[in-house]
Length: 258
Ligand code: CAA
Image (tube, rainbow, N blue to C red; front, side, top):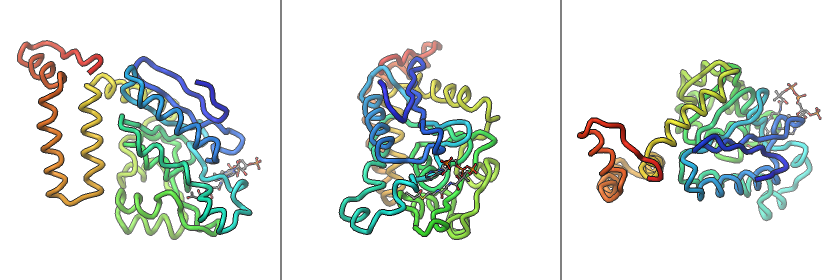
């Protein structure tokens, strides 16, 4: 796959997508987000891929929506024509696990895109923030909604209203990222985590992702019922037969292609 603003690589069963607009610190524009959607859907549909990693450069995961592109937009451009974020949510329709690897800046739309990944691993140089207020707008891709659900109201209000940037250690402490690793090991460590996921039965990984995401959209009772249905459905998969029989036979399970 060839793109203008992305670099894609395959590492065995893991697809690595790098945002690649280095001169603009990976500021997110229409073309890049269309390309990202295209790559994500292709990998999601590829049975040889079990996990996707989304990353940026060492200096920036992404420094936000492209301010140069939108500075002169009108309300009509943004409301009627839905410019800026109209093609940002493809990632939410990806059914396989997507791990974000954040190095450098993840600001504004960059932080929002990162939060749309299933979990984040950060380099120790990562910086997160929602500085939209400083350029006169609210967040536009879920910052006011996903941030409080992820880190709680107090921290979210603090970041959103002061526009302050937090480092990787604070991001880990407040639950925005799941792990922090040395920046020069970020891709290696994230690919290793993704390879672990890709070695699991993909169909079950997809069910788990689906169920966890349901937790943010429904009541506890409904969510637990939904999980129970998926748990029961897992007994219809070859992965369950292989996993449980491998355990009883004291051998490693073979989940390839499941
Ligand atoms: N859009 C467009 N270009 C951007 C950009 C952005 N969001 N962020 C950085 N760039 C460009 C700069 O204009 C600069 O380009 P030139 O070399 O052509 O001048 C280049 O990237 C390098 O940036 P800096 O010189 O500013 O680099 P720095 O190391 O001094 O600072 C930074 C880095 C702190 C990230 C700073 O660039 C910055 O504050 N960027 C803007 C962050 C921001 O406000 N993001 C929110 C955007 S609004 C949004 O995202 C809306 C939404 O929710 C959907």
